[in-house]
Length: 338
Image (cartoon, rainbow, N blue to C red; front, side, top):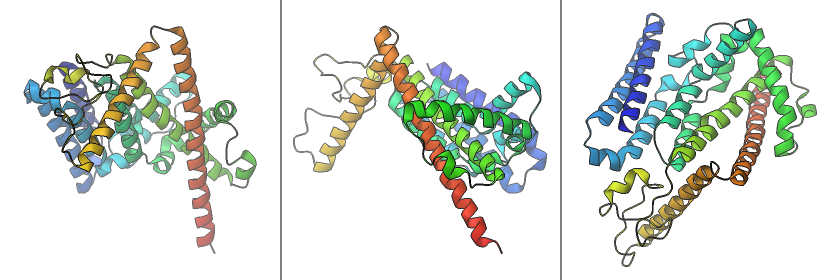
């Protein structure tokens, strides 16, 4: 498991270095600083997962992964469409089926969606931790209006592909999520360029929800071991980390340390312990549900139906956010006009 994490971090470091070298001649001093900071944070990741003692690594690895991934996402270069991975969006779309496949790959990589989804899927973590991390990362790094203004996504070929994807989602999503709001009639007043922006942002938002959050969480749930149980400990009950360090990699989460009981604890400590126990139970239920899909056709069908329902609702949410943002920008442009 530790070697896998080292390989993932090393690959991320080499990819960041290659992208930096590719665009180094066109960067300002501030952008050079941002790229250097991203490289330094990845070097810290590699050092931590290579040199930490095994006991410290087992105890704090999930916290370290979450902290370093969030720190990387807060660097300003990760929230722009001009630096790092986003340089892949600076070329027009390519013709033909092979060009379309390459362009979709460039879209997923240039918007930082694919690297973050792969890292979230490959790093061995509790599914609830993956869900929280991926949701935070998608929120921190989503610059959809800027992405939609790049050469790739504003190219006529890519616009046609996005429009076809939009049409497919417009037909499929209402079957799962119910009528979409705002309706197509309410969006008809938007000019063509605003409708292109709306389609682009809605498709990107849906991809971020499904590929960026839902799929890594499913992978984490399906690859995680069953929720570990200590003798005499009911399912989901927090355990004593000091007494059982060897269980840390297999536990549904890393709860607060619990002694013999909660007697004498403050109200805040009791509330924290209760919240931690609830999170443990939720994580255990999530991983047991995902693992059960591999053994029971009924559970697998129920999980697939739940994923389809969730994907449809994610599109409805992404579409609504994109419509509100596009309409607000149009009204602001009208108000500022002559």
